[in-house]
Image (cartoon, rainbow, N blue to C red; front, side):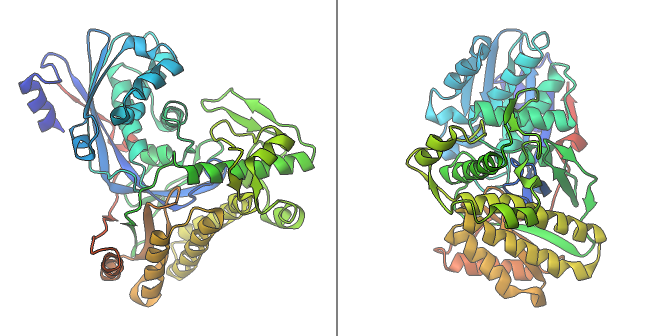
Length: 459
């Protein structure tokens, strides 16, 4: 990044040679286990990838914000955007500014950062900034490209404005930007992994709302890969939102049957509904209790309009219940509860550092993948990749595979022996042969999270 900053300074295009430039780096992540329980208070287990986003921020002396992201030309999007301090006057104003042109909607993840900082630190953010972004993380692959933009820009901007923002507070701030400004109902998992992850380390994260547990060394001899299905994934997509909404519909029904009142808690960074028994966390319902008392009472499917007439709200500020949409309430509620149990088992097996645990960890991944399909987040492409990994099997060093992140496309994560690259390559080659010969992107290796790399100042 130093060379790019020097070139931009020489060209006089973005950065002034008189003021320092603050540079931060944030990696992408692979969702090893967890997927969609981060918004229901579950435990998740995350790993970083080698690919990363870098952001360079230089404060200005006026009220303009200038963003440059040259790589976006390849997507047909606008690679340069400008805003003013006046655009940060309200949530509605900033959303209108970033949504004015479809080609610059990516700025919601970057300019939204400055709205958050301006709202919470108005004395610090009195001037605009120049922002340069570049990334090696492919977009819409389910490896947290949006979270990496938020975290890299937020880290660099906070340092530039002399704001102390890191760790859990940094992750929660970036989640707020994605929820409120970008309009994507993600949980905390992506941002926390990008901030707190470590090289060849697994991050267990209890999403209540964001409690990082000690990093677990990836067992010696074990490796994680990601294979891109080529099917675009988006957290703002209808499949993801429908599954999230269905989970909260099930939670709302259970609380109703138990006569447990719900209350909107806006005391934290991200607003949420809470109750007196599970504190708003559906994943805290024990699996045995769910099976015995609630599973058979929940409808397999329900129309959104029918649910709204009976319950009024589904107790989630960040997803919609559409009247004509049908929701898989039973499967999505079951996933939120049983996936949490699978992850807890997986974490204990990983902590054991025992080679005999690897096939069991793989089996839990296969179970997790199937549960995505039950919820409506499966797709033929990711199913095919998982099938190919299973066919290679433990005899060729591959123990398990599952779709990563929000599902409905994106990347499949594979767990295997460190020397099983040949098996992963065969999976990719066989997948390409049935997919028009297009070789999928394979993610291999990891890198430190944003907190571990810190912010570099180029003077």
